[in-house]
Length: 159
Image (cartoon, rainbow, N blue to C red; front, side, top):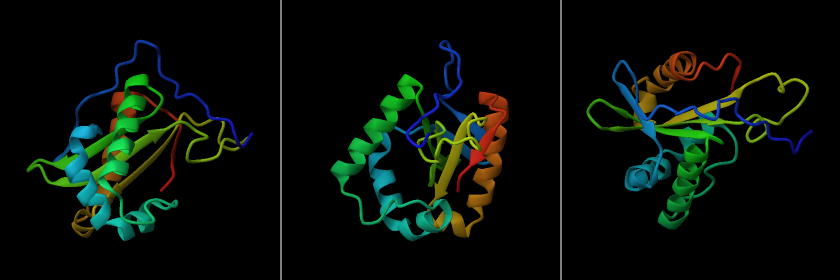
């Protein structure tokens, strides 16, 4: 079962939201257009990301080429509805972080304990945003967005 990836349960005609708002947060699909801000945010906040999101990424400074490919991958998966990645800004346009909606089996292993879940949600914020309380605020926003915009009932929050 460890190699199984469960498809995200969305209808074929589902159009994922292209803008989500919650209080002073605005989320948009993560695309190559966010490269400059994303590269700066990840590289300046690697320790905070590892502490709050876990996993093994990022382990070293990202190159622009690597990040560009990563963003293109997220863009393609969003288009194909196989995962959904969003970049999050505050209303002034400051880069806050990202959140990801992955199929079960991609980040959290598929198992008898996880097979009933719809998606795996994870997120990170920059060190500055973390210090300003945005980690908890983004978690609250994701819960609202998933209930109201995606209608996922069973979510694993894998941070």
